[in-house]
Length: 186
Image 1 (cartoon, rainbow, N blue to C red):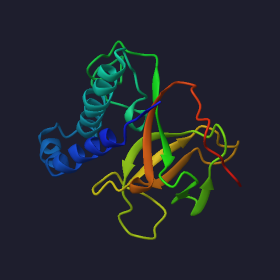
Image 2 (image 1 turned 180 degrees about the horizontal axis):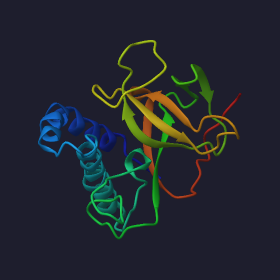
Image 3 (image 1 turned 120 degrees about the vertical axis):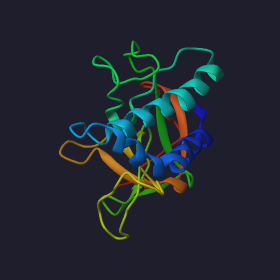
């Protein structure tokens, strides 16, 4: 397991620096296309080139992360990836742990989530609450929250949780590798 918090912050910085130009590029798209296509392609590209590329160089092995926002890009008809569309099987995941080593505050449920052994919260996407206090998020600056997938969610409960970005540390790990130092009390 390798700590990659700085990489995730760099990914966010790229989004922040370029977000104001997304609308200009989308205006050039044909009217009958989905406006979000360019953004989804761009963010998937950044994930692959910045995060996967660094991890591959560090580990000296081929790495395939889950798609950004679970959808990835809409660039090739048979793949949601940009740089290596032939990559299909996910080899590694980006996990989130609280900086305080005890719990996260989930902004969707408005509850503390205390960790227990083998809990896994997987990075999905950056979001923002456009109006403080509202319980829905948007994908626009300042991207100060993240949506994670709770791999241990109970049946009939939400698998998505929302954490404040500054409360998280990020790690890359092989698929099915588990943390051994985290604990949850419910």
